[in-house]
Length: 161
Image (cartoon, rainbow, N blue to C red; front, side, top):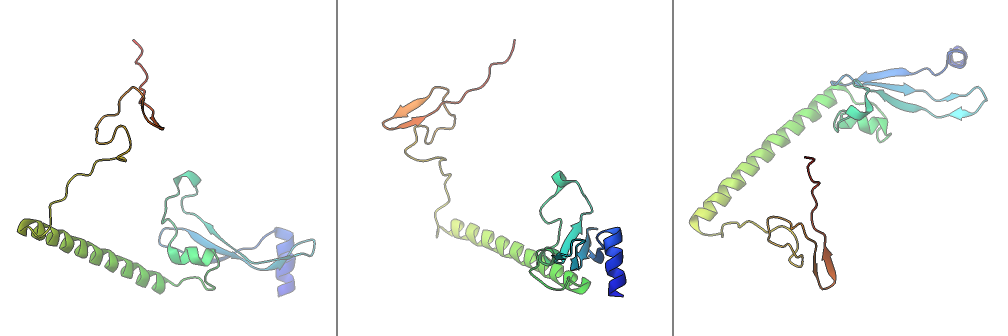
């Protein structure tokens, strides 16, 4: 059987085995270890066919972490559906708990400010104190210089009239 598979691979090109599909519609394949037509040993490869193949439309998180680990070879076996569902529910629980902690922290801060235990936060000026425009809301159009530093001015193109 392996000789037949090898002859088919050499005749029809690369054979890929469908390993799984995620909830986003991405399909994952394994190209088994094989010998090329020159007799060289080609190691196994893992690949994904994206549900949205446009490269410029890729967004982070379009491949689940478990499948990403399998593609990169950090895990030997592809993830199971049960594992994916369990990990997704754990991530959702963590998000809910983080939101609760943040809300409790904001309530505690407000209580401490009200009781006078903590000073109310002030708006912090942007920039560095050594900069010529420190504390100023607008940047001057003219360049400024203080000692060894130079602060360029802002320039806006004139509108055509």
